[in-house]
Length: 317
Image (tube, rainbow, N blue to C red):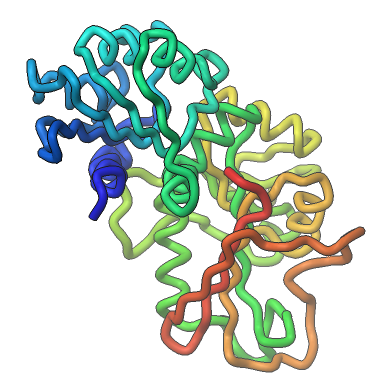
């Protein structure tokens, strides 16, 4: 494992406790030996770089700092990390990716170079992993909206129902959906889905530190007894409003009408498609007509019982 891979591993220890901040990990290395490690644990707490510097003490002088995100250059609840890095006498900073926060966004690297500290960017697969690790934060900070994942379950012929069957996919796929819900700030559907299925949209049968917010997009009213929030404005406006409320990730589980509407205006960042080994023969498809083809970036496949999960990105996070 490389030092930067170790930093990525450390960053995950803050998963679920750092919001609205990103997860960040840092490793300090001097003469080939790790002299300090750290990760960001909670908002207002020490940043990963400072934790690693404090662990290293005087051994930080002349060391190389491996960090998953560009050191911050602005005053927030804590002082800028670049100040701490410079004061500690670090010789080189190797970062996986830049910080999209407009208060830093390259200024951290610039200030390090001005102080005579060598700066290197990882690039390649490690950069991609760092981007994905904070995909919600990166989209929220850079675009002012949540990161949107469209989840669908479909047959081999692209249908979303199987005649005579309650479920399209198997138990393992359905469990993964609940894990996706548990990891999302918001789960959303369209009003058509609400009226047809009365979905609960909560995370069940999996470890969930908290339940996601659950909402419906569309022109009301909601059916009597529905516990979902209704968002009736333009999709771009509603996503911007949700971002202002601190929402960084949104799992879209709506039917093909809503999903196609999101895709047509470029508001889907990732696709997760659960494909069952079944030919339905008839029924609605998981997606409507698009004006042009869309290619997936970094596509992956995973076997889940009898099903296959196909996932990929529509934009670089």
